[in-house]
Length: 443
Image (cartoon, rainbow, N blue to C red; front, side, top):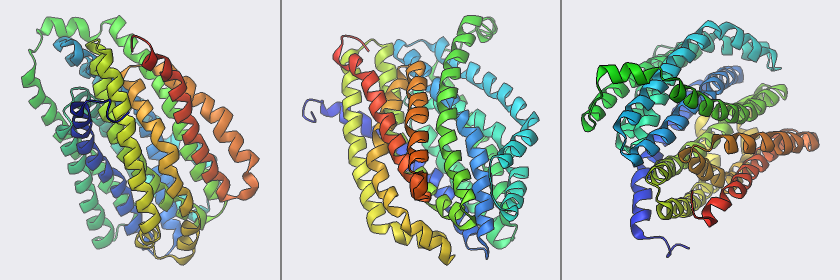
């Protein structure tokens, strides 16, 4: 299989994937820094509060990740067709939707926080610190949504260096402020939240500069064309329909992560803190493998736009090969260095003991999860959002929840068993849906 793929395709995958892997790794590293600076405070409830608050924010933001996904797929297909107007209008529509969502979320932020706390049995101390974190952190959501639109647009144009700079600068900025606010100013969970908000808006300013720089490559449309196409109902509703299906898919995915945090909270402060440490490792895997997914999104979208079925199939197969190799690297790393990484994050003995006990699930996870990331990228590039939605609904309702409730007597092990089974089922179901296009005459 490896030899049947031209070397040029492998080089293209690596050229697109590596910058995004390197930049994406900075995202969970930020989470690790949050955990490290908070995890060395004297009580587990500080780390638990940040974990719970971060879960709420990540749930909201990740639900809106459809902006990034749909923008990437549509931009990549327009890029394959060499349609400059469609490329620019895709960004404009994405920013317009980001603005509308930001207004709604800010108006509803208090109700969202109250609902989140109703769904968890976390201790009063954990909830108090989570409330302090969220009162500041929620103000960064609008910048995060605009950054999704910008990031998706740049990836769709196969410009991976620009989003790499965007993500790395944002997260380095955040890490530095984390250390300054929490360690030196001793602002606690409020300092961690403020660092994240400032970094989001700094990233937005830098992202806008990258967008204006990219504009030089296109023939800008007339103002009359912009006004006519900006609110063109067929295009706007088409994007909203695509976003709706990806939103449902993202909602289901984030519900599984929230389920992990809330069920962990019901086991005690030490368990929610230990799971927070391990979920940072899961995020590390996810964001790194997303680098390969971003590459295949851009390549598949462009191939479909150009109606090149050969490049389409070669891109899919090459991405699966490289993702498999990366999963071996991650699993080996967790096996060798996992315990040391846990000890680096927190020096609370009970949290360390619990996290190390469940570490083998993280060693297994790269192998069970790798395939769904690649196939997600293929379906995003092909803008097959309904298939992604249906696959996710099936995996949550028929795999994740039954696995947990059947094995719930195993305690925290049941959560990690359900997560591994869920990830594997996602990959298998998407592969089954994709197989006809790989065998047939068209993508």
